[in-house]
Image (cartoon, rainbow, N blue to C red; front, side):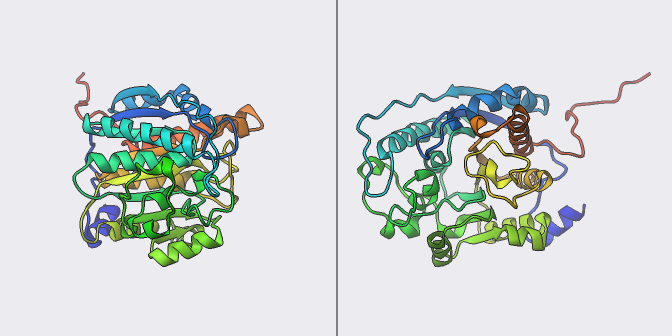
Amino acid sequence: VAIMRSASRMGYTLSVFKRDHHSVGIIGAPFSKGQPRGGVEKGPNVIRSAGLADKLKAQGCSVKDYGNLCFEEVPGDEPVGRVKRPGAVGSANQRLAHAVYTAKTEGHTPLMLGGDHSLAIGSIHGHAAAIPGDLSVVWVDAHADINTPLTTPTGNVHGQSMSYLIRELQSKIPVIPQFSWIKPCVSAKDIVYIGLRDVDPEEHYILKYLGIKVFSMTEVDGLGIARVMEETCDYLFSHVKKPIHLSYDIDAIDPSLTPATGTPAVGGLTYREGVYITEHICQTGLLSAVDLVEVNPQQGTTEAQVQSTVDIAVDVLLGCFGRRRAGNHPADYCLPEP
């Protein structure tokens, strides 16, 4: 009730007591060329093997698993400027964009299991193409991934994903032939970052330059996650309620809990904060597509580290699609009579 009152004061309503039916379309994207560490391509299968589909069904979702996409090798994939492996990244994302578009137009909420975060290019692009209006993007991550091809210190595209998608940044993006299919599809005012704590100076400038809403870990610590999510929704819904694309990097969670990831950064979200974000977004009724990326079982030094990372990834996703820690029951449940 307190959540409902608070949300109502802020001009939007959470469907706190309404159990929505979700039709989830799982798309595996076993891709690792957006960064240098092997193993992240195993993410989709280790998340599936933790029982994701069965757990989603148990909480009332229907699930269609589209399987894993196949990404071909690109021979002679030389850098373009600083950008590494542009051929592989460009073609993989184009294929993913089509898959997300298909899942969305077939009536499912696309759930893209990565793979590295360069895949957000295709996932968001395909999502935007499948809906009539604009998207909101909630980017939950330790990193902003908003370097341009000219500011990137590494050349790895998983640190540049958002720059290719933002309309207001296009004058700063050089021509990359393998990315010519990408059309900017998100406005800076429709983006919220949550969990940032490892941001390059150039990225910090870009965020300020574009006026993008950011809740770094400083704000999470100072405001608390409930207030962060209230302010996120108030900001996004202040004019028009737009479908939400949630792009969730598992390294947003503190590496003491999710160590099996490629670029861990200390001081991250707790388990409870990480799950609360998804519960709150689910309750808006506007969640329209989800990415869960950067689970890398080869980066865990023990089986327990890998299992912890995968289990939390699954719990994050269950929160996206209706699981509540207060409990759930089927909508048609009746107490048995003696």
